[in-house]
Image 1 (cartoon, rainbow, N blue to C red):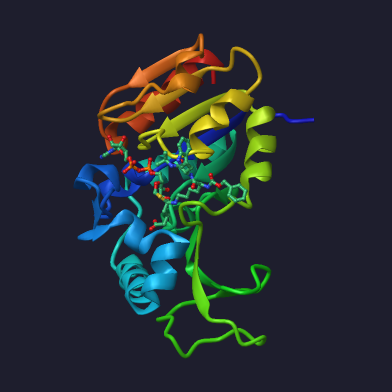
Image 2 (image 1 turned 90 degrees about the horizontal axis):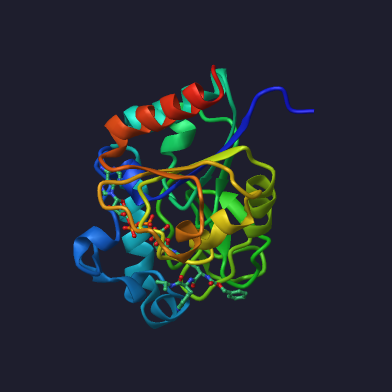
Length: 236
Ligand code: BJW
């Protein structure tokens, strides 16, 4: 039996924005200067594997320069009083670096590589992935990232977490990319949902919540207000 209240925290690119990692839709459809489909789709990888590998190699290098911000840290510190599961759409490792214990990466992890011909072959990967890197079966290694049009393998785990939570905090996501954007619809009826974002997008699923509380503003200042809201609610 759970002793602490179980909070699911769903994060997107905005939670890492103030750590210096660019968001997707705040950059006019370009992602670090590239069309999103050029670098984040299986077709893009098939058309120009060298470009896509280098795009992610650069982002893997960038990970070494960035640090968790006050929002990542506040989420990790919530574990003192709540049972917390972080479901992140981000491929960075800033929740890990901040100290969160239970993290589900819906869209993959930059710190891993997988085989393009054997999706069960996944390796921790620190440096660059190059065209000469093959799995034991001879398939090209690729970034361990869920691209557009690909299935989201961690979805079932995420749904299980949401289905048994007491409250949800959403931080820094445009709630436009599915199936992540529909996760709130699996929550038990009437769970409180706190949504932290300077430009919140109340999608269809959120519009159906009777207990949505919006904290309009940046993650580093508003996350702690959302956490305090839940502490007050549960008299912690
Ligand atoms: C701040 C802030 C601050 C700023 N503080 N906040 C039509 C309808 C419905 C669905 C589809 C459709 N056509 C296609 C689809 C499916 C598609 C999809 O959803 N497309 C939409 C674009 C419409 N989805 C998929 O393809 C998914 N797979 C799938 O559906 O599979 C089906 C299937 C089943 C079985 C077999 C086969 C297939 C896969 C989606 C994968 C997404 N991958 C990416 C790339 C990851 C790699 C990488 O990082 O390069 O994941 S796309 C990109 O978007 C990335 C993100 O995780 C994801 C979500 O973005 P996020 O985090 O919300 O970022 P932004 O930039 O959108 O928003 C930032 C927010 O931060 C904003 O709100 C700002 O205001 C805010 N912000 N500063 C707080 N300081």
